Length: 108
Image (cartoon, rainbow, N blue to C red; front, side, top):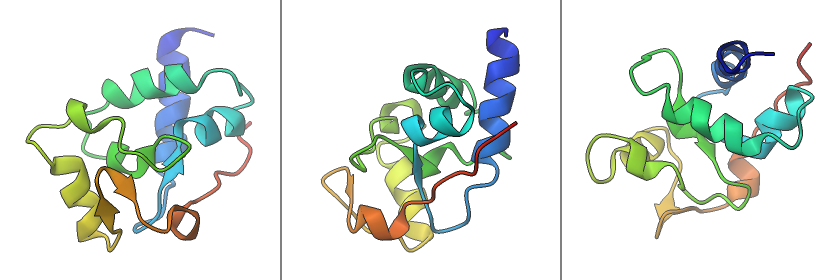
């Protein structure tokens, strides 16, 4: 599978993340049946910032850290977007991560 096809599959999963919820790079990778490709999911998210329909701000690391925040315009844009959806962030970490976590369904 080419990177382009993989990225499109990642974006299809990311578009399903509900408002006010988050998921992780690894959860998306597992949903796609490629559990060891969490880093590639991160690369896909980094490449999505000119796509208005991909909510990359809702994808964080497995501990709820905003590891992708440096790829957003503005100092705290990722945090601001999450907070606008009712998700509290303290020191780059989502508060009550388990409560906000969304498990993507297995993808075909």
